[in-house]
Image (tube, rainbow, N blue to C red; front, side, top):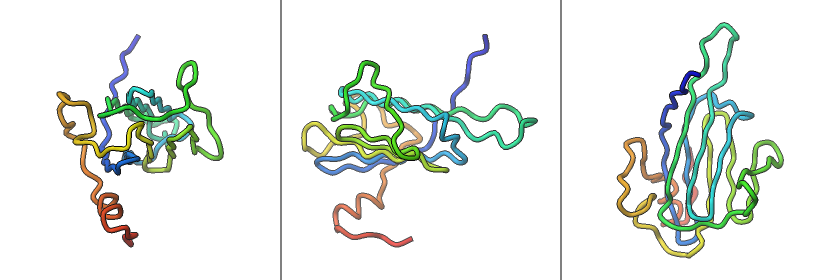
Length: 149
């Protein structure tokens, strides 16, 4: 059986005392094949692939992102933590939400404890090379303004 090689997508993040925002950038996402898992301990696992535009094209690129978040988060606890689709690829959790768009996946994750995090991942884990700060969200929070595109 052939082992699947996953690409690591670029992503950016920002946080407030109560929420964590993560935007994963992947062009031409196959929405129906996107799966995300989030546990109360702060384990985030996402897997997706690009759209195959033509049946004669080679298999599409597969993407995966695994993060151990800095702290615990609020999620809807279910037996396997897999989330159900509600209204066109928007997934509603007890306190957290994510949406799958054509070129990105956007997470808004509610923190269990209202405190600013020093980093995205747990202490001792290195910053990933494809990780960036989402300065647009940071500025929106700091100045309470909506930036225009």
